[in-house]
Image (tube, rainbow, N blue to C red):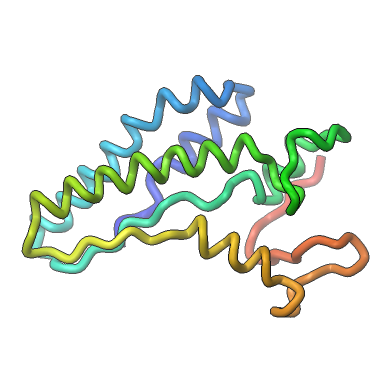
Amino acid sequence: MVGAIGGNDYNYAFFQKRSIEEVKNMVPDVVQAIKNAAKRVIQDGAVRVIVPGKFPIGCLPIYLTAFETNDSAPYDGHHCFKSFNNFAMYHNEHLQQAIKELKEEYQNATIVYGNYYDAFQWLYGHARYLGIYDYNSYTPILHCFVVVAK
């Protein structure tokens, strides 16, 4: 598995109050770094590689806490930030294109996109049935992420 590359770069930029458009300008460089890392592991002998995408970062507690607002417009139906999730999808679309290019270049390797975004959204949507739902706050409980206090 090629590690989660670029997440800290994006997080740092967003927490420095950079706009979505400014951070989108970083995507080609981040995706290229991921592509280069995948090439290195394949050139070193890997024949099966998973390249993970980004989570819907607009649902992560650290974003929900840091950018919290009483205005309902920025939130979707799960109370996640639409703009940050759209950014994650933008990154993932570029990453999937890079993976297609890798597959063409390394036809003897199996290169798979790890769709963390949809997997997370599935968990979020099924939280009540999975026993990870807080009926007091009407939100999924995601203990695997750290919430920072303001």
